[in-house]
Length: 235
Picture (cartoon, rainbow, N blue to C red):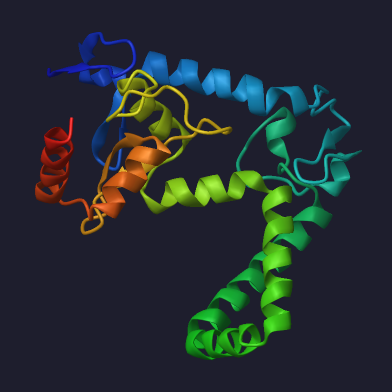
């Protein structure tokens, strides 16, 4: 059985000690991955989790509305289960609302797919008016303040990453920019995701200055070498 090296602890372990994603082995071993997940849970979710018994025999807490209701308000599972597992996780009222929401979402997705060009045309017409453009900018700023994590999630997803993948890349670089070695990058201390503009493959994490510098030189090694020679002549 093949040995794989964990990118976090650096130990070589059997491949069964690594999770598989899309047919490929994770670069982080199960122990390190589980430790990371527990740490993230303790910071992001545990403080907001209400600790109360879900099932007491006569009533159960709905997983959607978080209200304690009689077991008569829950549908019974078709599988032969006992205790809390005998009933569905959410109450009948929430189940009905959930079905309606899913159907509405499916109808909305179908409409957007069938009328994509029409929607784009209407959006262009709407934003062609200066007042509407300003309204759109104000709404975007307010939304970014309310949900700052969304911009981060979308940016990572654009390059096929998540928070764990970003942290693994940063760990490989010892928490520094891959070019200049800077440890801090602006007030948010978030490094830019450098990628190939042709294949969109992620290369490394860079500070703002190095990332902008590569972009200004069009990612051309020959031009960068000429720039370095130019600076050497004037030392």
